[in-house]
Image (cartoon, rainbow, N blue to C red; front, top):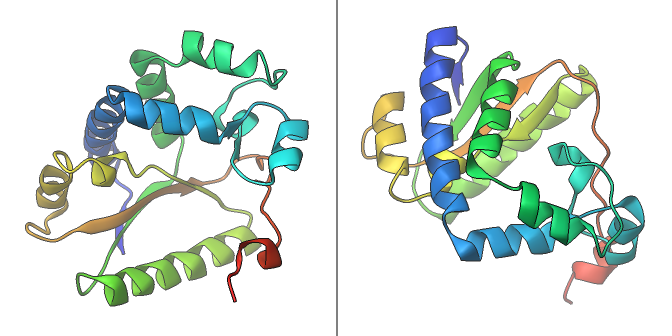
Amino acid sequence: MLLITERPRLEQAIEFIQQGNGAQMDSPAFVRELKEWIRFNPAEALKKGDGLLGRCSGSPSAPGWLGPVLFGLAFRKDAENGKYSRQVRSSAALAVFVAEKEGPEGWIQVGRSFERMALQATVLGIRHAHVNMPIEVPEVRPGFADWLGIPGRRPDLVIRFGRAQPMPMSIRRPLDAVMVS
């Protein structure tokens, strides 16, 4: 895990986050998939049993028929980039997880490391959120890796963390509804 705490470095990280976010927002497929995963009110989240409650991304609760319309009107690159900038600036630090080895074994180790960090953070009342845009966009990832000082390697997760009020928990399906035997 690489820890970024210095304010000038966080400002530089914001540039990569905005690059990745901009590329994602320019992708109609990405925007369509995101819109499909947002649950615009708690009743919709409970009914579907998955997704991201819109309030977790700063959107007000809205009726199911109105939420997608508002999303189409309000979801804009400049606004989203501004939101992510404010969020990173209000965070204590960024944690970037990098696998020792490329491939599934390394990715599982990264997942385990993140899980331990996330659970301990929760115990300590520290909030965390993914800001993976610089690693999710193939054109941005190599420059981000170079900036991190790990040229040729693959950063796997970018997490911001700090003190904040808790957000609503995401709804999850019961284990027996998703396990295949």
